[in-house]
Length: 235
Image: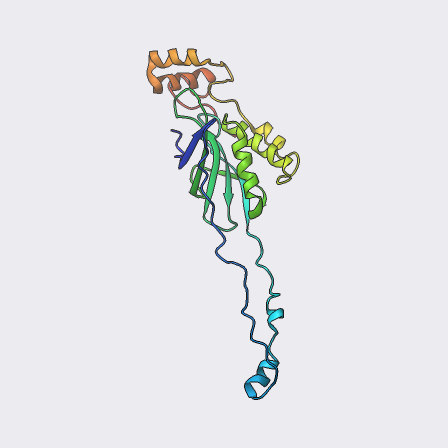
């Protein structure tokens, strides 16, 4: 597997296992109305007559709706294109949930969607984080649905496609998805020097083994020299 370990996954056409995010623990405040009184016969009644009426007590403000921040996170591998994830985090929290598309490490890419809760927001492999917007708790269902509706594919194209779908839902500013296109890269199997077919890459694996085939592909694509020294740089 890729070095970002999955919590739950689903292949295209399967049922997604998306865990619930942190639930709101505070319900609406509701006071208990006092009994009506016909007369003020003692000091207690007199004091109570100056208290706030039960109707006014019921008019306490509703708690503000929770919101989450959406980020696009990127690795800095330097030996192959960056892995992109969408990160949902409660503002100020140390932990977030990753939403991304990935495939088995070193294998021919057959992509699956992944949802990974309780990931460090400052994950040591996510060196770049671009904040996209805030999403209200009531809109999180739309976000999760967009992640499910987009077909699993190369992680960078998956993120861009989800952002464009969120634009249509009114959750993300128009043009956000396109703004990431210039930063996107070909997958290692796609180029820039050679585009492998599944059969061709399979023959390479048969000849050199999985690790050897991957290293050979990196050399052919220009990301490593004949000695295995990485040449490609994300910057």
